[in-house]
Length: 318
Image 1 (cartoon, rainbow, N blue to C red):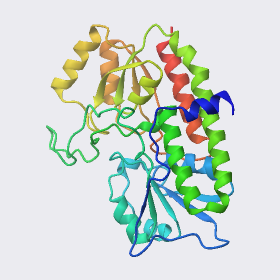
Image 2 (spheres, rainbow, N blue to C red):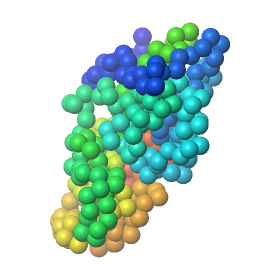
Image 3 (cartoon, rainbow, N blue to C red):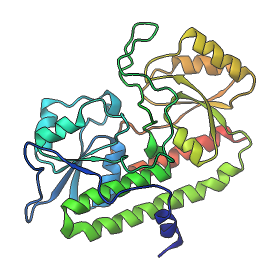
Image 4 (cartoon, rainbow, N blue to C red):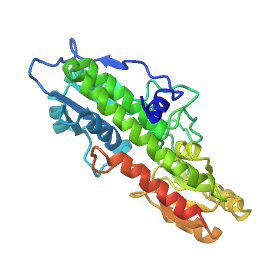
């Protein structure tokens, strides 16, 4: 066994062999002899992990359209028809999906897989900006996409991505036993690549003199923890909801005291407040990708993780 693979197996994550909920009006669909496994994923990062594990042994599709962020998506009638042909529905869990995935899986007689279910409480980070969904802000806007108890963006660090990949492999192998060995081999290769990516960049992060940053939205605390960074502020409590005047003044006061070196934006969201705060505070601006929308692919999540690391280093480095 390689050193990297041994390291992967020793990660401090509690991942049960199966985290499957059979749902349906009756039993969930099984794989018929000669039938190809079909996997439906609720986000691009889950679809990408599933594609890396499936290879040509199973078909993987993404449930929402590529241009629709996961937390803004609601299934359509056409999506319900697509689900009828699938066997597994992969969800992130941790309140990322805003629709009732269990009911959706039940109506289509799918096996529902919560890919975060096996993450230990020691790994999960509390959501510093959790609010009940639907709570009105000072301007009367509902917070429909507020975080739950834990921050859901676990896939933006290597440990979280590996844990979710293991959950996916376990679900695919349980329903498609003839191809289980192939799924396990692909998972091992994926883990090795992800760990190599982390180990390649960690020494560069250790050399950084400035590690503090502000995020437009609270998507990157797992990345920060994995690479020894410190997120000192969040501008939008929920996507698209700008800070109140009092919150903005408090953050600007903190930043004037040297509390951060940069503000990281996210594509597709209103960044006017972030840009104004950066200008007032003299901070660098750069964009990180949470990969909550976009086109999935077998290496797509790995590519996003590496681009984010390069961006952080280029922005915080001297």
